[in-house]
Image: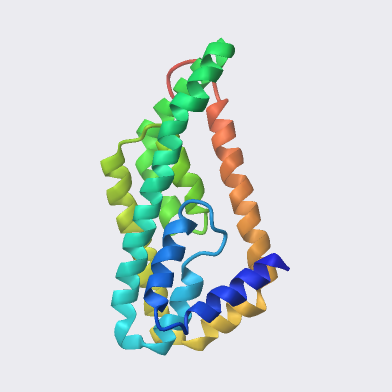
Length: 205
């Protein structure tokens, strides 16, 4: 199973002398496309060096937000290469995009906050935020708070429950994979429904 291989490989990186750099790299690309969340690497790293927990959380947060900004850029610049041509070909597409854009401008901060903190794939949020041209400063600040809070909670739980958390992840990897896929698809469906919610130019919610 590919995900099991990626998981095992990620766990091996935790023991690497340069594990902190591997964590930064994984946190960055996970915000764009990588399926394994940085939490999987944070867990064994914190268990192995509790004194370094806050450094680990800081590196993961900064790298994740930086990757989120790259994902935002991908979505933002996709407007000119994908959205505008479609508007010219399908005029009705423009009004639907306006609905998506208006709704995201109103609720985008909440969407980013929930996406950065919850199991909803953050990569969906980063690209969608850029596509909707959501305020990049708000995106960065909310991402930093939500991603930082998530990683801090994980580090805190490790102090209380230790290796039990890792055992749970490994024993439930198949289930967690199914949940991840469901959330990923759900995220795309959510934005698809929002995008096609109305033919007007004002958010209906």
